[in-house]
Length: 289
Image 1 (cartoon, one colour):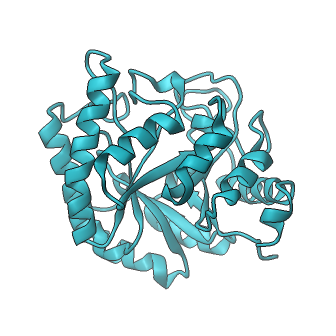
Image 2 (tube, helix red, strand yellow):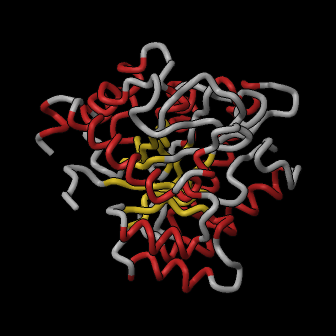
């Protein structure tokens, strides 16, 4: 299998029907370089062994998706309800998994403020991220805040633009807090080029998939099969100096043609090919890497 001119990653959300152990074995065999770990897939009794199996298979870790990753309640993870309990869950995730993922971003987003108060949500999340960042630093990891698509506002998130996320990140005053840049979520933002430039080296991880008008809350498709101008977004991101993994993260629930019902090995290979084509079209900056 030909090598790629970039570090190619897959999020375990992309292959939800597989177990964690299947993800590790199959990703390594299918030419994937890094895995985005989904904590919910880990076995509570075997998690240390499973995390150690990643490097043994020749994979790196691009990021960790905590089981509870939002400060306010969300559709995907409604419980626990109290803020302090949710923060405690995030802290526990960092404490138990950080030693297996040095330097890796733990991904979070705001969740949905119960009254739709975006301003209060941003203030509270900045404060809580500032404190959680101290725990992250102690365990040698970072935090990456992800703005979500407007389809998720007041469902999963209070913020939906890169600039809003950067406002929260900058308010923490911590170098350990950066941005999770998911193209599916932000590709329709206005002024994206300027926002990317503002982000600079605060982009801690990049996620990609493709867009069709959603049929459900979780309806993403393989890179190259939809409307997102991936080559242009890759070029913008590369211009910031980003040199970390490029991770495909697909959700495919509650749709008649769910990718989860397809041959997932073929889906992973299509994702690899789609990202390679987008990279090739992204211009000399990316091609020189």
